[in-house]
Image (cartoon, rainbow, N blue to C red; front, side, top):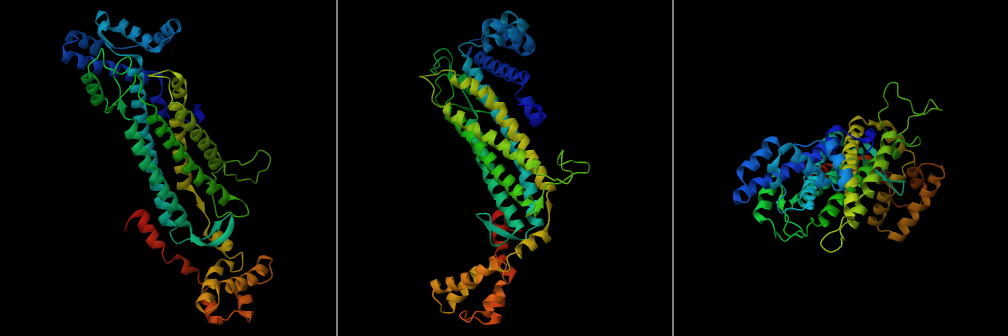
Amino acid sequence: MIPRYARPDMTALWEAESRFSIWLEIETHALDAMVKLGIVPEDAAKAVREKGGFDVDRIDEIEREVKHDVIAFLTSLSEHVGPEARFVHQGMTSSDVLDTCFNVQLVRASDILLKDMDALLAALKKRAMEHKMTATIGRSHGIHAEPTTFGLKLAQAYAEFDRCRDRLVAARKEIATCAISGAVGTFANIDPSVEEHVAEAMGLEVEPVSTQVIPRDRHAMFFSTLGVIASSMERLAVEVRHLQRTEVLEAEEYFSEGQKGSSAMPHKRNPILTENLTGLARLVRGMSVPAMENVALWHERDISHSSVERMIGPDATITLDFALVRLTNVVENLLVYPERMQANLDKLGGLVHSQRVLLALTQAGVSREDAYRLVQRNAMPVWRGEGQFLDLLKADEDVILSDDALEALFDLGYHFKHVDTIFARVFGPE
């Protein structure tokens, strides 16, 4: 991942130093368990704990010769520890270290992402409360439909990301497994208690059945969850982009002092952050497909998944971490224009109340078909700019409602009588 779209805490998790440190943790915990079984002398485990170390450059140098990263690591480790290093990795296979480490990294990445989502949820809730009753037009197919509030738009986003958070918690739990089971997962040369000890020490659960590798359906679920979060992120970003269009301009990204929008047109204020988020969402979502394709491995194990995970592990989590923080910043600093929202509400001359008129006519005894025809007959001229909807209805002799009854149907507040109910469902009772 390029530095432009990366934050230091998540990036550090995927650096070589961090990865080899986790490998060393796994090997050390396994040694401790073997000491309890009487397989490894205490002096050997002590030597690894006290002198255990590695050199990243040296590992890279060894790997260029042996073409095997775990062997290169073990060789570097032995150069630090000495003769006692012969007890390291007893009965284990490379995937025991690689898969357990990968899951540790994904768990720790999840914890960072959960903090990101908490910050986003807090920002959404604050702005939703701020604009709880800010009237705006609701749109379907991009066309004016009926009134809603800007707070409800943000409450919907909050509810969606709250669901995403629950999914990430579940995905974190599913990925938090450990496998120290040997060559084909049969524990032929290592006791299951070693796996149990390592799992507990690393904050993981034991993988019930591993075939040298941890089943990749877990990882498919994890990266698919990241893809869903990215899709929800894009949905909110696209909404902001639409609201910032010149013809709409009901809300826009914060434009800082000295910021430039275009190299050619000095007047431009472009939604660059949410456009950027739309692109980043595509990347994260795209990584879910190779994760699902990793599920089908040959027999007990092949390494067709390995190259994929070396890329999507860091790239998906680093990208989503950056994007969630950017989206939080957009929400926190979003410029909202209630007057423009009201102006857009009024743009269609009252047509947003057409359903109320339709229903009132049916309540007055008009068939639904005739009521629809009457309302549409008076609505179409308004679309052409030929008058106000209420005036045309009052002038239509076939519309049997009184002027007072018609005027009452054009009350904007009518549409917001259940906003409190919806907010209570989303945020709980105040």
